[in-house]
Length: 304
Image (cartoon, rainbow, N blue to C red; front, side):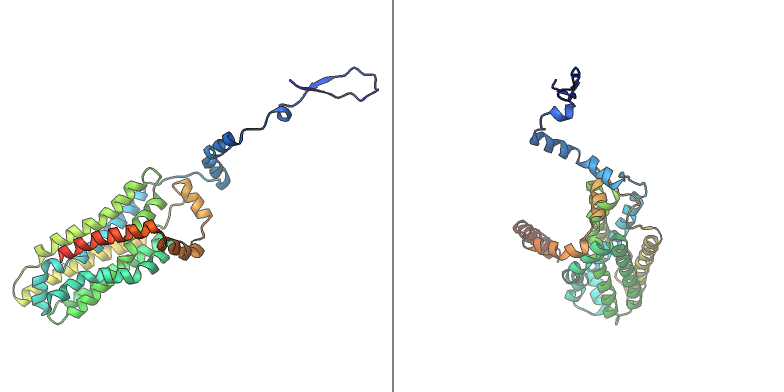
């Protein structure tokens, strides 16, 4: 152990030897091990800095269930005309191409509106996006109620267009909802469940309309279309009411340290367009975009 004297020269006193503090003699810490320790303590430092601990709430499952219901109801309306195309074409006196446009309008509105919808989601959060989606679903469904006569195809198409535009505010929700409400070990499950909701709705859209609307006289078809449209309108109105009353944009306390940091450093308003530009210039993203687009278009045209 190193020592040092605290006696002044010439004082005649016996030197008192004191140990030097270990802090003064300890060799400098290896930079590599310091970095490792820093990385290992990152999460603890974040918690100390934010003075907040992550927490998950039971009502996260309620939020997920409300979104699944909304997404499923939107998906069901996508295909509801095409699965009874012959009946719809005969009743309204339109071509099969016109009937197919009741589903293709979903794709057309997606191309036109996906960027504004993504911006609104990033800037204003989950609640506004779901309210817009639920409102469009309900309004479009009620508009269709006025189209149960042979001259009402343009009315039903207007309603379907509004519903198609509403999908913009549901398709991008699953990853955001999972990240905002669920813990790190639940994000994948929650995201998959959110995507499953839309597929479940599409399956219902294939199954239910043929059970309700069958061929017959114009009066019979009109009555059956009324049943179909009314059930859809009531269901979507109930989902809208649930979201208005009970859906929360985020939990009181974030479920993960990543969300705590994201809320503290939120600069989405200034970063959105820069992030979008970088994405569009990414080679990997472009390859994924082309591959997925090719696969989806093949399956879509096979259905047609």
